Amino acid sequence: MADPTASRILVINSGSSSLKFQLLSPGDGVVHASGIVERVGQENGTAKIAADGKESTFEGPVADHKAAMTIVETLFGEVGLSLTDGSIRAVGHRVVQGGARYSEPVLIDEQVRWDIHDLGKLAPLHNYAAVDGIDGAMALLPDVPHIAVFDTAFFTGLPEAAATYALNREIATEYRVRRYGAHGTSHQYVSRTVSELLAAEGRDVSDLRQIVMHLGNGASASAVLGDRAVETSMGLTPLEGLVMGTRTGDIDPTIYLHLHRRAGLDAPAIDDILNKRSGMQGMCGMSDFRDITKAVEAGDEAAILATDVYVHRLRKYLGSYTFVLGGLDVLTFTAGIGENVPMVRERLLTGLEDLGIEIDLAANAARAEGPRVISTPASRTLVMIVPTNEELSIAQQADAVARGEG
Image (cartoon, rainbow, N blue to C red):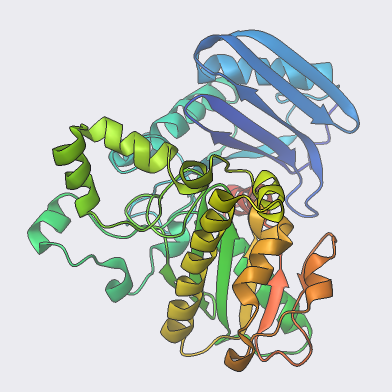
């Protein structure tokens, strides 16, 4: 029989054709189970789960996200766990776009569900899938509170000068065009972790000036003053900002018109090019930095140029955000590339000693787990690697709302 005092949180991250899940305890961060259902909406779907050394898989049709949740329930049973035995306190749903309205996690009701769906106009690849995942999870767990945790929430408090585009005011207002950012759950988790680590050493962190670089297949940077985000690289959509695995990042908007007029491409084709066929993949035919690093070391000219472009963009944001903050106390790297690709960090930071950043090459190259410092003792700016944990952050926020503390 389940312990009635248990406080496990089920975290759901729904994509257009996938559903990732993780069951964890928000207090100590222990992960009890994790997995993914892929090819949702197709006849040849797959799913897998790992829990306490046990694994199980599924192959077959996955009609929709409701069906995906039923498969998840079956997988849990196959590894000796249950989703419906009363041990789950709440379900936390990752929602990419919360607009300007949602600055905190919120209990999902009909109005919230409608708002998330309506905000799909700003994030069609993400929010509609989130609603499908919410519907599927609610059908399976109707008596458990479901909480939406928004990727944009951390950036709803951006200064207006940072959030506002120099676009016709009436048009911007009518169509809700502003900078919303993304990856906010990660940026908030990492910046707070840094502040907590330094506060534990006796440092005053009330005005700590941080830059966080979340470098994965999707990549973004943020400037954080104290506990408040004051800048972020992603904008109305996740296309703006840094060079990414398949996305261009910052681009002259007239390129849209150029490709339409000269190449005869329509809007969907251009969108596909900019979001799925550009970035590192478009420049050198690779988006995985493990492959790119090998290609650079082998002298591949396309990979070398693509990496130079990638690092050049990072330097532009590092410099501009340092000026926005009026100086820099801590620079932190996180996510797959940020945590695991020494070459990118070394190329970005080498030669910045006169600006107060001095990297320890040995520490940078070393493999280690957990938060760690990769700058020298002489460096005026502390440079760190802090592994992100968006699932734990979502679980903690969902748990707080479920307890009435959110």
